[in-house]
Amino acid sequence: MQDVAAHSWDASKTALPAWSLPKDAVDRIALPAHWPERVTREWALGGSTGAGVRVCILDSGVDASHPLVGELESAVVVSVDDDDEVVAAEDTEGDVSGHGTACAGIVRRLAPDARISSVRVLGSSFTGSGAVLLGGLRYAIEQRFDVINMSLSTTKKPFATVLHELADSAYFNRTVLVASAHNMPVESYPWRFSSVISVGSHEEPDPLDFFYNPSPPVEFFGRGVNVEVPWLGGRVLTVSGNSFATPHMTSICALVLAKHPELTPFQLKSVLYLTATNVGGGT
Amino acid sequence: MSEHPDLRAAVAAGVVGSEESYRTLLSAIVEVARSIFGAKASSILLLDEDTEELVFEAVVGEGEDTLLGTRFPAGTGIAGWVLATRTPLVIEDVQNDPRFASDVAEGTGYVPKGLMAAPLLHEEGALGVLSVLDRPEQTLFSLQEMELLGLFANQAAIAVDLLQRARRAERLLGEGGDELDVVARLATAVDKLEDEQRESGLKLLNHLARTLGA
Image 1 (spheres, rainbow over the protein chains, first blue to last red):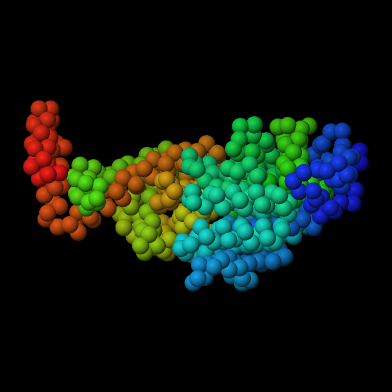
Image 2 (cartoon, rainbow over the protein chains, first blue to last red):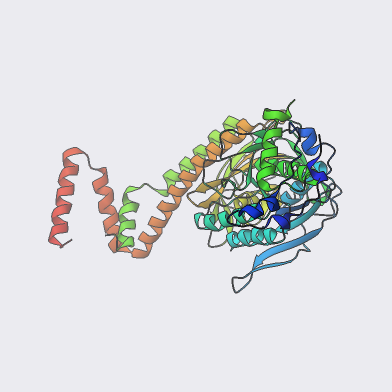
């Protein structure tokens, strides 16, 4: 079994052709051929620590001083100025609620060598919160993070179209958007879009257990019940909810991408399917 | 009539029911939620969009005598977080959670150790938050409870929507003065009539409408 990652892979070479495939261009999109006979979880993420993978926590900010979180690669706060322009500035405030810190702590625990950044889209005011959410996601996609953890959703339909475009542009630019599914009977976004990895909760205690859902729109279930997480003030709390299952799947994506950086979001999703606990990963 | 929202409001205020009945419905919802979860308290907070504050609209159990009507900024506390993210959340050991607005809790002499909170979502908006405080300590949280909480929150959101409609109607009616009050009283009276009397009442109103050229 030869590791696909052993191939030198340059994503930029795959940029052409864009819309069609002339005969003489076939060689230019040759893909790594040495896939294992069977994609196992060991092949996918065994021994990985998430090294080098850039993970963005799009949330309430992250408290980097918590010992269970540690150093961040960057931290920005997104806001809307007086001219309704979305602005991203260095975030010196940290976490305004604790939730982003909890998500970052889960990623740090499971993928300790991932490079974590924070993009804060939650503050103390509700005014313009939808625009801030969209602006923050757009900023994160422009930064070309490998994985964006989004434990939030919006119920505002006017935002759905823009969110859809953003989710697709992330998907085509090799940024994996991992989004928390809503567990209430409402329409919300962006988790319902097929270009993202949507996450609901399971009750199993193993943080690397994850399940593929054959009845979408929720595609995967990650650990989301009675999870110990870091919180503000150096505290540790026990929490439950899909918003904590999401960073578990984010971590699993980071582990796989660290070992197989050539994978596109489409391929990564296929690997996740093949190695899900209820598909091939449980054996 | 669609060109006259105040007249519509007057008729609506006459027939949709009073604010009091919807408040009773909210109280019933938190009472059942508390009972089902075996919790010490349960409450419904509503968002006041004008002031960006959360207001206790229904409280049962610990704090029910003091919290009703209490306000705090919508950006604070666990409820504020749940509202902003529209995401349900379960937290144990709330005393250690800086998001918990302890000044509100301590005002009641009661600080909970655990809290489940879900947003009240109606159409595209988040109207408020349903909270259930202190389930029995020995029970670990399960997904089944989260589902149940979501169902209660859904029910509460419908009741809150009705309450807010009644309030809007009554406010418009108040602004319209005595003239609209007549319309509201007329609507109430016709609504209460039964069978033949109701039929006669509606006929009379139709005659009146034709006479007035409506």
